[in-house]
Structures are given as C-alpha cells and as structure tokens.
Amino acid sequence: MRIISFRQEKTCSQSLGLLTEYRIISALLIFLLFIAPLPALAEDAGIDALRQVSKAFATIAEKASPAVVGIKAEKTITYSQPTFRDWPFGEQFDPFDNDIFDRFFRWRSPRRRAPQQRKYQQTAQGSGFIVSDDGYILTNNHLVGDAEKVLVKVGEDPEVEAEVIGKDAESDVAVIKIDKKGLTHLEMADSDELEVGEWVVAIGNPFLLRQTVTAGIVSAKGRSGFSLAEFEDFIQTDAAINPGNSGGPLLNLDGKVVGINTFIISQTGGYMGIGFAIPINMAKFVYQRLVEKGEVERGYLGIIYQELTPESARPFGLDKDTKGVAVTQVIDDSAADKAGLKRYDVIVELDGQPVENGNQFLNRVAMLKPGTKVKIVVLRDGKRKTFTAELGTRPPQDQRPGAEPKIQQQLGFTVKNLTDEYAKRLGFEGLSGVVVTSVEAGSLAAKKGITAGMLIMEVNREPVKNSKDFDEAIEKAKKEGSALLLVNDGSYTKVVVLKLVDE
Image (cartoon, rainbow, N blue to C red; front, side):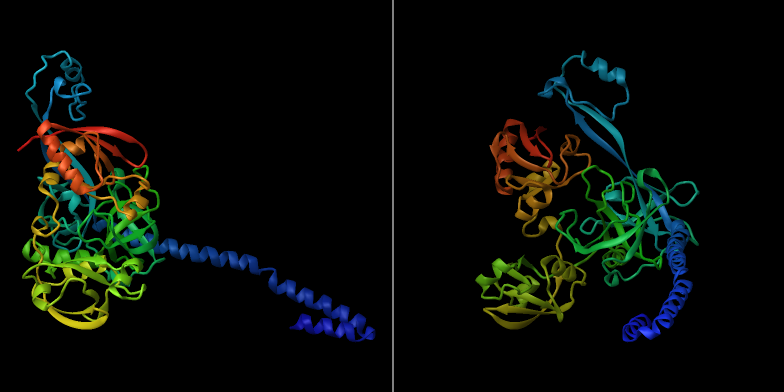
C-alpha cells in the first residue's frame, strides 16, 4: 500500500519531487532492513521442519524396532529327480545338490528310468512383529503356513522356536507365539482412518539386513485383483519394501501398526516404489479368531455375483453410474436363498452402507460372524427392496461353487481366464491364454520356473483360450505322460515341459 500511495504523490506535483525521492529512498532502506533476513529465516524454518520430521522417524524406529522380529521358516521337500533319459533336453540341473563332482559324473552313470528320491531343506526368511507382551506375533501365512519349524530372532537374543497358533491362507495372515514374557509390543491403529498421502514407515529384515527402516507415503487404498489371497484390500505404499520384509509392520507417525507388509510389484525382483500391505483391521479380525479358536470362521451369504459397470448397468435398467453387485447365482439353501434374494438382483446397500464394489462387499460380509443378521437393499426391476439375511458359515475353498478344478490342484498351480484387466496390468494385451494365479512351493511347476502372473498360451501345441480349454488339454496330456506348455512371462515366450501322472 505504501508503495502504491507514494507513486500517486509523485505524479501529482513536481514541487514535491525532492520529498518524494527522499521518501522512496527511506522506504527502500526500511524494506531492505526488514526483508533481507527473510531468506535466511525461511531456510532455517525449513531445516527445522525437516529436523522435526526426521526426529519423528527416529522416534518411531527407536520404539518400534525392538518389537520387529526376524523369522526363519524351514520345510523338508521330497521330490522325484528323473534320470537323464527322462528329460527331453538332457538332465535337469539340481540346484539343491552341492556335490559338483556328483553332478558331473552323473552324466556318465547308467541311464535308469526309475526316479531318484531327493530331499532338501527349504528355508524362507521374513519378518513379523510382536503384538502382546507374552509373545504373540503377527506375520504372513505365505511365510510360515507350510513350515515344519519356525525360528524367531528377537533383538540380539538367540533364535527360539515358535509355535504356529493359526494360519489363514485366505487373508495371508498367520499368528505364531514364542515362550517369553515382558516383551516390547506394537499397538494396532484403525487402518480405516488411514489417508492417501499420509506418511508411513516400514520396518523389516530385507535381504537379511535386520531392523531396516524405510519411509514413504500411502499411495492408494483398497487395492485388489492380484489373486494372491481370497480377501484383498491392500494398502499401497512407496515405502521401500524388499524380499525379507514380508510380515513386517507398516506404521503411522504415531508408531502404531496400520498394515502387514506383504508383497511388491517389480520388474527386477527388488524395490520399484510399489509395495502392498494387508490393512491391520483385516489382520486384527483374523488374529482374534486364530487366538480364540485356531481357525477363522467367516460370514457367508451364498451368492455368486458380478460387479456392476457402466456397460452392465444398462441391461438391468439402471443408470450407468449405479454402484453395486449383480447377483448371477443364488446357492440353494444358503442365507441369500432363505432371505429371498434372486438372480439379477443388484445389491446396493449392506447394513445401511453403500456397496461400492465387489471386493469391498466380499470383505465386509466375510468379516462378520456366522449367524449375524444383515439388512440388504437390492434393486429388483429398478425398485428398491430390503431383505434380512442371517449369514451362514463360509465353507472351505474347495467346497464352494467355482472352486479350482482338481486337475489344477494336482499340477501345483492354478489358472484363471485372461481378462482385459489382467491383460493390461500384466502386459498381455493382444494375446490369449490363461493366467497363472498361484504356484505351490516345492511343486514340479515351481521347480520348472512357473510363477504367478505368467500366461500359458498353448498346451502340447494346442492354443488354450480359457480355463476350461486348459483343463481339458491337461487331462488329454496326462494320457501322454507330459505336457509341453508355451508360456509368456511378460518379456519373452518359452516352453516348459511338465511330467504328468495319470491317477
């Protein structure tokens, strides 16, 4: 204001010129006197702010690290090692045989057809965190679920063997316990309150580097569709997560756990800024039930549904922006059947809360106890109707409609149809086949390099367009004793030979 006002005075009268110039000089001197130190002050304020953030991270690390443990899971694997003549391209390299001379001279040994039984100790390294002072620990099921022996290292103490209290493959959460008292433990937060953009800290043991602390932000919430677990509602973060971080905690700035670090998306096998954690609210639900009963009982409505999209909404006579799930099948004698739900009903509300998408709906139902009564609002022929259903108990995966075929279980891996979403996410646009969704550790498929996310395009040189084609082709291949698979891992195409047994 003062500068603007002064310029007006100068244009009004030349007789005030000297006074005006004096005023200009005085104003400039005053301005420089007060303004010149501001850059230095701003710099100091910025550094102080950074120091406060740094101190917050240091405080979290100091308080939380003693409760973060290293986990070693051990399992003995027995497999049949075919001899030289059984392999179409020569003898398979045995990565678990440490005798190089034995490997060398085996080429010159008699070519027997009988398979050799071999054993090796499979060891997985990961993380976990203590949630009670008497030794209960949360971690990932994929780390300890199939282990014969679980060892835990707390701080600088020697490793101790842990008891597996319970495991839940459908959420990839497991609870183990060590026989110790008075342990430092972490408090669980409410992960529903977590916001995108919020600072988080990950602690774990990547590449056996104990008590590694990294920081980042919450990149997204509610991520799903990876087919790594039945129930997916992952927190995405750019806090560095690497192999060995599995099972470790993701913490907010209060030092409370908001998630269990579980997996990353990477083209190199290492950190690329995209990591995922199981929300701690989901893990708490599983933890409580595993500690109480050793298993997780979940609510079950008894429907097969399809998420509503702008394209699919119109055939139902609904606006393209309508959110919900469309019922495509009602299981006989299920909670939904008894409540009166029908095919083509569109579920838009569950217990007064809107149904935004299918994954959210599945998780909300499953986190309710069997016997819980829920109110369901549906759109039937465009009209709202309300039903009350008493949830049943979710049956085991292999007993539910749509369970993986037995043939896939025997192979040691499972597949699903290649959808447009999978094709775009995995880089298979323009291709056809089935996507590998899971691979059993220690299976022949795993040893041959088949991994989740691969695309199987052909079986014995015959194209497969969906899982039905694949199952039929494998059944046919079993009669021949082996299957030649044409697979694509997103970078290149190769062939994999699987030896099959017709049971």
